[in-house]
Length: 292
Image (cartoon, rainbow, N blue to C red; front, side, top):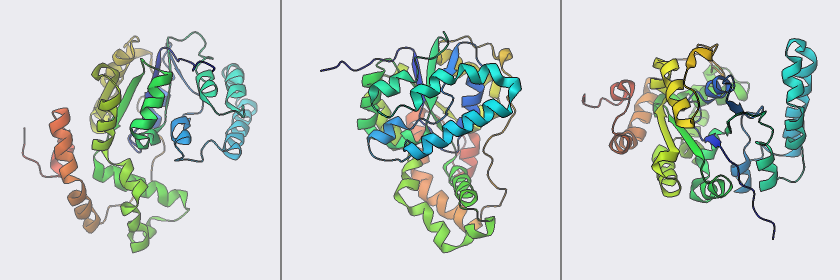
């Protein structure tokens, strides 16, 4: 029996969705000692537990075409795109197994640590995380939480844009019913994610942070994350820290929905505060929690 590959000096960010993970991926990719996969979300572990079609041949071919389009239309970045050629050859292999996944971190150009960011790994539970740990026993795992009310609204706005609907659709009962769907609810179940993380990884392998704290002081947040990854934390090397990515439509959340979401997530927020020791001030105001 072939021995499973082992990925050394590896990290992964498992979410949450709409919590600034695209910004984090692009910021870390600028670090001299950090390799981030050219395709931000690999989706391997949610693929093997049957939760996604993001690794279908059609979707991977689409990403491969976009890579070639960038190569030929962004000649000023020609060297960078050429350097990604070996990585994309591995990515386009047809045998989607552990060796395939490990190969995605072999082309790291001598960088100290390598990783990827797939927010939907928040759904894979203990079985998926155990598989991840088998491949990367010393993995460093990042999980970022966002005020669940504003995160839910941002996700709804994102879905609205993806469905090519304007914001008026968000007030329809049919669209708002999305918040009760199993997948939508699971993506916001931070306690479930923490339970799974703590069951599989040691505390020193887990990094928790809050979206609101990160974006209140991005350089300080990046310094914390770099120290967790074991790389230089001099954030003076980073550019474009104020960039925003994947912005949703701008629309005010209906008061009735905000009230409903506050009721839905209040007990979870209290649990997060008990587990982590604190929540951001924006969460306290949202849920009218007593000051600490």
